[in-house]
Image 1 (cartoon, one colour):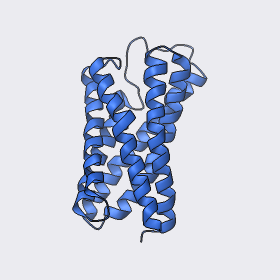
Image 2 (spheres, one colour):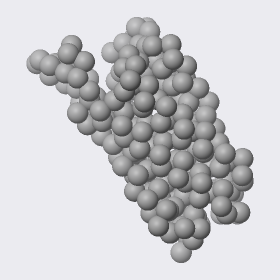
Image 3 (cartoon, one colour):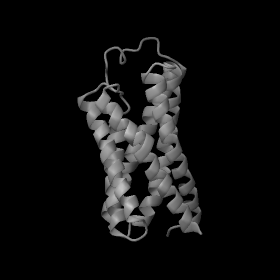
Image 4 (cartoon, helix red, strand yellow):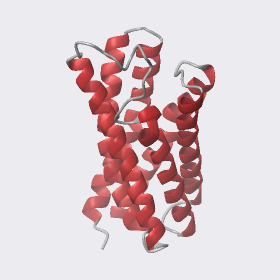
Length: 207
């Protein structure tokens, strides 16, 4: 049974996740990639990615509770994939943060452009997260609990996250203009709008 207490809790965390998304984009793109403060930018981005994964995992559980009656099997699938994405993203952030705070004696991965061992090319952070969002958006669109526009925004957020993963996998360079545009639109506009709107909707259910 859905609890109002958890809806309120998850709604607040969804709003925080929505706020944290643009902060991550600013830290990673402007501070790190554009070399304004590269070390500080990567440290902040790693910390925000870690926190964002934890926050979004909590939100996905609340979302699952609201859509599971639409199709329980697809709801479980959406939750599992989303949790893989959230936990994988948090692990990615924790890995990078650990290396920033205590740099290894020899970084054999960086110069050779090896993928992050915890989350290769953002498979979890963007790929799994995007697939999970698309599945949840479809389930949201089948019921009356969430506005249809919110479900449509979820489709867009999921598709853009998948596109970021594919761009990082194929194009590779994060500073490539195509990658930057897609990541910028996703991280600065679409993802924050979805999570903040979802958070407000979850909190409104408590009243």
